[in-house]
Image (tube, rainbow, N blue to C red; front, side, top):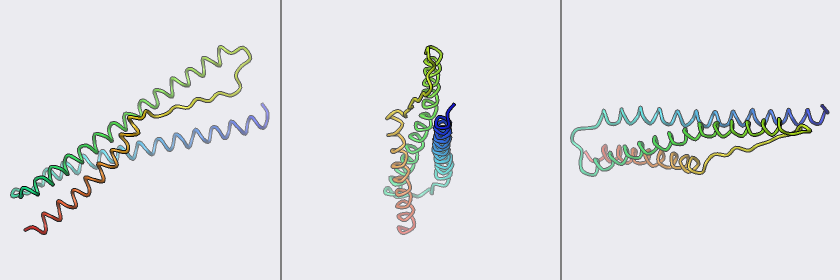
Length: 148
């Protein structure tokens, strides 16, 4: 194996390593969003005051709905991780079969695995719903405090 080919392989290994780290941290972040949102929504519902005005009820319900949507979209995004790894395994199997079937032995193989558009949209919607739920919560608390 030539020095150049060894250098290329080491660089490819580094790219793969950091790409895997990026995916790992991305999905860990979404797991934390889901866990924190679920805990908060349970606490929020458990501590609801008894006498709420109609406006406060709407703000409360909208906050709960937005947190719920944030959780849902975060879970959908996390499902994308499973699908990504499944597609990666298929791509590697395909490369292995091509390598085995080649007469002269393929020296370099590369396959790009991408995330489905649905999961990319779901990721964005997670952030939008989370931001809106936090804003709704702030408005709810301000309205609750200042309208007594």
